[in-house]
Length: 280
Image 1 (spheres, rainbow, N blue to C red):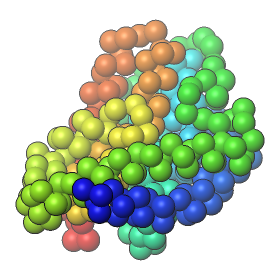
Image 2: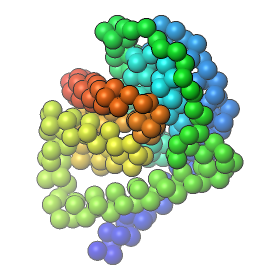
Image 3: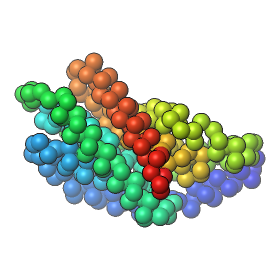
Image 4: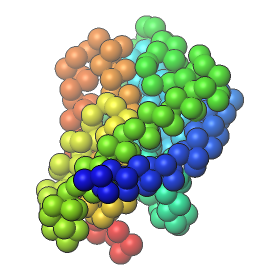
């Protein structure tokens, strides 16, 4: 047991410096470009889904939350919101970077998320066209508990690093225990690696409005316990705290449930398609 704990601590400690550097870069980007990106998407009009998907994939902790508030005020369309939610990467990108995953694989993942967001966003706008309602109230970008806009760049990056490191440590402990008890081959045959079933389960996990879900999904993939298609389903449905903010600021509760269902369906289908790719 102590050997498992020691290995998990060592594996996590190796990632910490890379996580801190990555989060410092991300915080700098968000402080400098977050408001400008939201303003750009707000003015995009019918091209909102394309621009939203492209901007949403950038590692900014507050953009999905800002998009939820913009939609609640009917400043952006449902298609644009869908595109941003699908392309949001939350904690996936810093974990992949800190694990020194192949840049080619990272670009494929991000590219698939952007493409899925664009296509789904335009389709949603085409199917659910309706007149935009009058602007009601646009909440501030920092109206959620995940963004460190009010803190300094280093302090916020340090906080993010500590939080994610704890999640990674707990997941490493659980995975190492599972490997010890059932073996790597058996672990790889669990439901996460089964076609369709893996996508359905991972897509549901991705809907949890917390950074822990994207951490779990990414770590399971890196450890070989989840295949590429299942990972993509979870990453497509994961919006960071976007869904949480949407439910808080959008007074149309039934509509919120429909958006969750729409996001889940698109994520599962997208994951199934991703699993069919030759490099998946």
